[in-house]
Image (tube, rainbow, N blue to C red; front, side, top):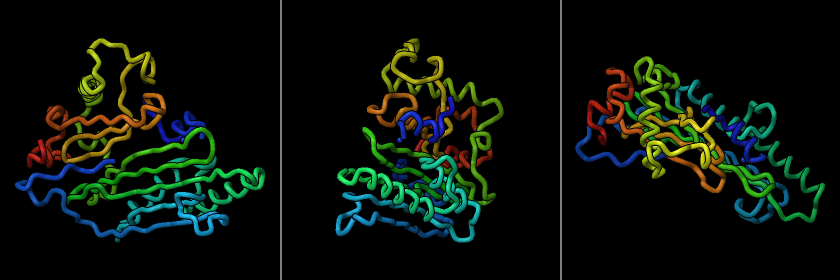
Length: 272
C-alpha cells in the first residue's frame, strides 16, 4: 500500500530521524559531513500578528539546507517543501509564493469571520540527519493547521547519493526481487512491535489494504538499518500518531547488494 502526503491530507480533511550516536571505534568515514551546506529560513506573518510570537498568531516558518554546488539536490529539497502538504491543487513553484498564499488564505478567512480568534500555522523543515562519503540523509517534516478539529503533521525522507546526484532507491541497495523477502521480514518486526501474534488479523485495527501488511515508500537509509515512518491516518487512527518501523541490516543481509551505499554500514559494522 503506497500512501502519499496528498492522500494523507485527504484523510485529515485538510492534515525524525536522528542517527544513533556511533560507537567510538567506528570508522571515521561514516557519519562525516562531506558536502557543504547552510540553512536558510523563510518567515512570513499575518498583518494582525503585531507583537505576538509566531506560536500565537498566523505565521509561516520554513527552514531548509542549501548545498553548495548541488542544484539537483536543492531542487529536490524545494520540491519536498512545496508538495509536503499540497496547500492548493497545483504546487507552487516558489517557497515565498507558497508562504504568501498561505497568509492570504488566513486573511480571507478572517474577513468572513472577524471575531474568530483562530489562527493558521505552517511550519515545515528539511534537515540533514546523516552524511558520509556516499550518502546524504535528510528528514523532511512539518505541521499545518488551517482550521478544523486538528492540524496535520508529516515526516518524510530524502536519501541522496552525493556522488551521482541522484535519489537512492531500495533497488539501488537491495537485490532484484527483494520485495517479498523484505515485506516478510518487515511484517515480523511490525507484529513484534505491535505485540501481535503471527496470525492475528490486521483488518480491524489497521488501515492496510484488504488487511494485508505492506511497506510504504517512506524510508530513511541509516547506519543502523532501514527506518520506515507511517504518518498519521496512514495505517492507524489520527490519535495513534506516527508508527515507526526499523529493519536492521542484520535481518536483511541476504537481500543486500554487496557493493552499494548501504553495504558500507554492514561491512564496517556500523552499529550492527
